[in-house]
Image 1: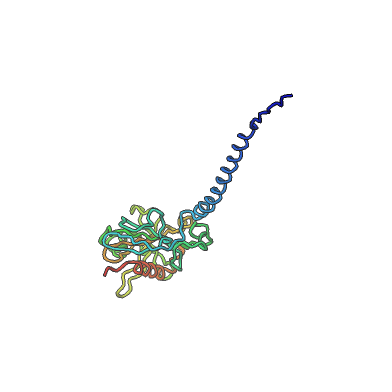
Image 2: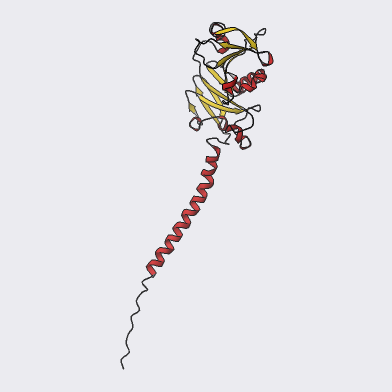
Amino acid sequence: MQASTQRVEPITGCHLLQRAFYCVVALAIISIGLVLAGRYFGHTISLGGHTEETTLHEVVIGNSILELPANAIRFRSQRRDGVAERVDLYLHWPDMQGYQPVFIGDFNGSGDKKTLLFLTFEPRATSRDMSGRYGPIYSTLTDGPGKKGPSGLTVQNFRSTSGFVNEELVVAPENTGRVPFVARCLDEATSKSNLASCQRDIFIGEDLQLTYRFPRELLADWQSVDQKVRAYADGHLKTLK
């Protein structure tokens, strides 16, 4: 009797099993990638554009160089070294620090108090800062002597024809050897929905103008605010040797 040879055929399901195995491996790799990306991008999204980095950037504006920490620079596109037309900062009051995780509510505008100052450095656009413009310009646009404000300030109303809608002029008397403090603020009603409703500009260094905005609620501390803003600017202005 002739023994019959039996041909062993490959199981047709092997190809399917191999494909399934590769699919499982691919899905596992994708899942791991999504977890890692989620950790990174999730943290980035939670920062809302803020950064915890404190690396100093040398920003050149005109003939001036500013050394600024990354977490104090408001916009991501400005967190770099080199020449710029302007640079915008935001600082936590009263410590004058840039973004930190502990202050995330304040930096996102959801804190119990308004505690942010907004600073903009740019080339000087006028021959006088806001204090210098008071006599020749602002004083001619207001009505009456004004009313008493906090900490020795006087709050003056702008004339309806001045173009300053819902704004008031806040002035401190001129002291011996010092120019008067002058700022424009949104009125009290409008300020309630604004994080930084007062604005003032000053000259820094040889050719820089610094415009800073602060909450109207800080008017009672106007002397400290102005002093700390000037000190911060001077402290980050690089002196060329």
